[in-house]
Image (cartoon, rainbow, N blue to C red; front, side):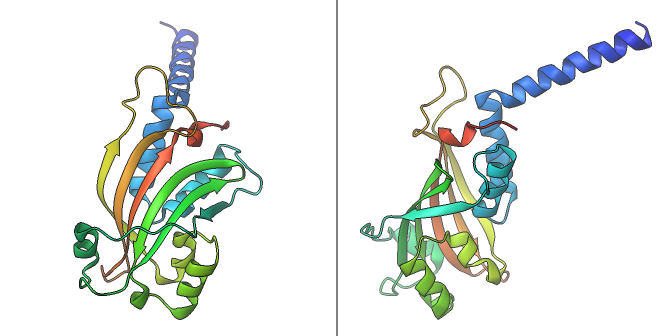
Length: 193
């Protein structure tokens, strides 16, 4: 095969690889990989939103359900290293970029480990948790990934789940700040690169 034929073959393979990456299953795995490698789901979703042209400006907002109440299961309290009677905050949010809802999350957090200003913002606004605690230089420790779609057959509808993450948000010393359970929705796969 000559140089021209080799170049054409490589170009065809690159186009094929691009098509696979743009397939719903490829996009789902790319998003999951990026979330697992990132210290902040909020910042990762914001970058994803910008790259997929989901909104301009590409900014993640948290539509908070102010009426939601969900007592922390024993496992959550254990992971957060808090006593059974220590108060926890709870937020149920839908993270969106423009009109696109990318995930739904349950978030239990330890108010005593956050500043009064952070607690006020969390209880009184729709600011995403990741943005609120950014001054603490948090990182995530993923506890598990549950696949809700196996990547085969018809992709889920936009408001159905692709995968779920369970993670601890910790400060730089490893002290838990929050336990999150996030379900990433098929709408995150929309848009164009």
